[in-house]
Image 1 (spheres, helix red, strand yellow):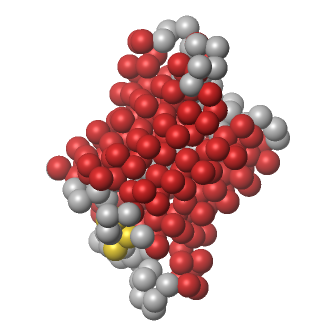
Image 2 (cartoon, helix red, strand yellow):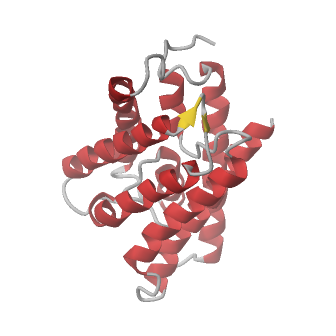
Image 3 (cartoon, helix red, strand yellow):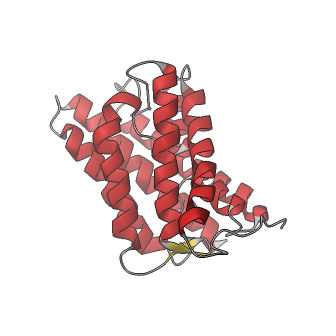
Length: 222
């Protein structure tokens, strides 16, 4: 149960800090800035990896969990409780933000600035890059080495910096699901549920192309 609690707490922190930065930026006339929002997402993931990486791997993301399962790094039996824990943490964070900032119309929900297809493709590619990096700096379903948190947090901040203004740079179904449901912004939610999962799966053959043989083995049945 500790690893499921870790996923819930870590995802709560991610959504509360990350989408909270968006909400505060909107309610304070841009005081946080786009750069500040991107750095907030990267830094909170970095902090959670160092805090919880040895417990659960600090996935904080259903797409990452499914990616680890498909890569044979994690048992499929753990996928559902991991994802349920992540969603529970995300909804708790969005619920608290709604209580604190009832005037916010979106609660930091990810919304496409351009066409739906543009954001869909961006989210696929962004998540594929993120998952490729995570697979490359992890062993089994957990991060390895003292630099893993810096690398993963840095990639998230980097992608949010350049793609955030277009697609929101979610890369995370739980991060998008909770604020969308709590705020009622459901029209484009399908993009942020489907695209990250597809992108994470695309990272697996890419990892096999460059890493040592056996880095991503057969899919585990249990």
